Amino acid sequence: FSGSLDESVLEAAIRIARAEEAVLVPAYLLLVPLRYAEDSPLRDQVKMAMPLLEAVEHAALRAGVPVDARIEKGRTLTHAVKRLWEAEAFDRIVAPAPSNGREGFTPKELAWLLTNAPSETLVLKPAA
Image 1 (cartoon, rainbow, N blue to C red):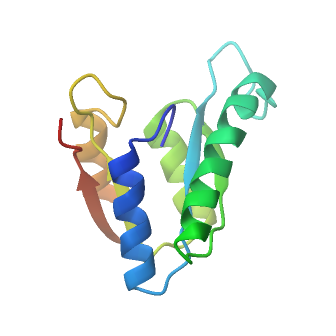
Image 2: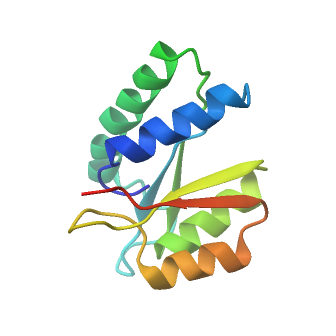
């Protein structure tokens, strides 16, 4: 995810991880503007990401689900996801779709995800 994470998507990911006795790996995707080098630290974005990842971790741990959070950078969301997939293996991917003005992957990005994902992929569109 990038930006905020819809509560219903988080709850679904936690339920799936608990049912499968799996580790939840929330991945915050940072966009690196072209004016910066790809390895730039992006401290301001990391400061925004950390409380969100901590909230995800607390919610998962309350549900008894182990967590291994990640932050990945890229020029676009799909570039960041591709870099994440190159670094880690995943059994299942849960991606948020946009709903009623909420944040999430665009339809084009979701099509790319579903076409290129290395494992089973679930796209969740939160209800209004």
